[in-house]
Length: 123
Image (cartoon, rainbow, N blue to C red; front, top):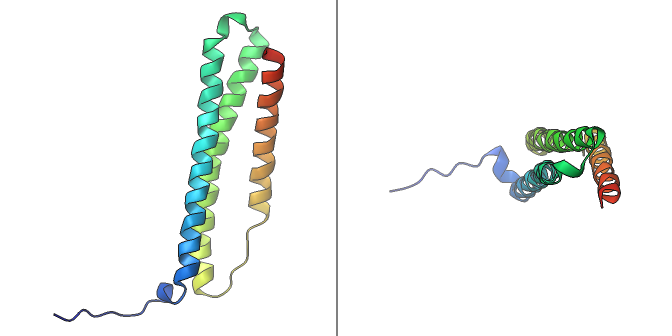
């Protein structure tokens, strides 16, 4: 029994595609972490709810929701980046993404800064 092994465009750039897959998995791990932080903040909110004012309730809820939204955005940006890189690797027109990464990083820094500020005032 002979297998018909035909070379594909993807097989010409195996190392690049495998690196792209590892990068995509790093995006997913980051997204899971950010979403987990959102749930952690929300659980903390309910754990300490009797000691918090109305404004603190709202702030913590917003931080939790924003963390979850940024986690979902990370999955979407990572998936888009992965799919775009598959095409650009095969066509030998690779360009690294800059603006989407910068925007996502700024958003995450904003969320984590809010979490640090709230944690400082609550403890």
